Length: 140
Figure 1 (cartoon, rainbow, N blue to C red):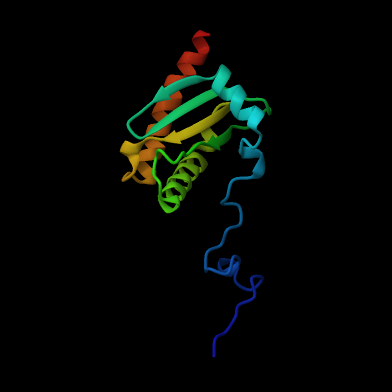
Figure 2: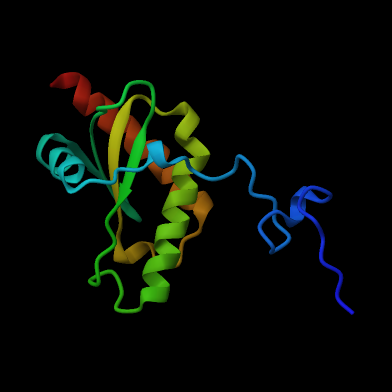
C-alpha cells in the first residue's frame, strides 16, 4: 500500500514529485509576456551572439528587476521535446544569474550549435554576452 505524504509534513513532497519548489522558480514579474514588450526589445535592443545563444537586451520597463523572454522557433528543431528542453535550460541559466543582472529586458534565443550544451555552459555564455551588451548600451 502506497503512503501519501502531506506537503505540510514534508516540504520536499510539495509538488508531488519529491522536489520542493518553494522559492526556486521565476516569479511572473521576471518574464516578458506581451508581444509589445518583445517588439520593443527587438526594436531598441542591443544584440550579442555567442556559440550557443543570441541575446537581445534593452533597458527595462519595470524598475529593479531583470525580465526575460524566450524565442525558440521550429528552425531550432522540429521536435517540440527538443525546443522545450532548450527553453528549460535557458530559463534555468537566467534564474541562476538573475540576482546579479542589471535592470534589463532580455530575449534569449538558442542557436542550433547549442543543442548539446548544458545549463552551466549556457549560464557562463549568458554572463559573457550580458557584459558585452552592457558595454554596447553604455555607448548609446
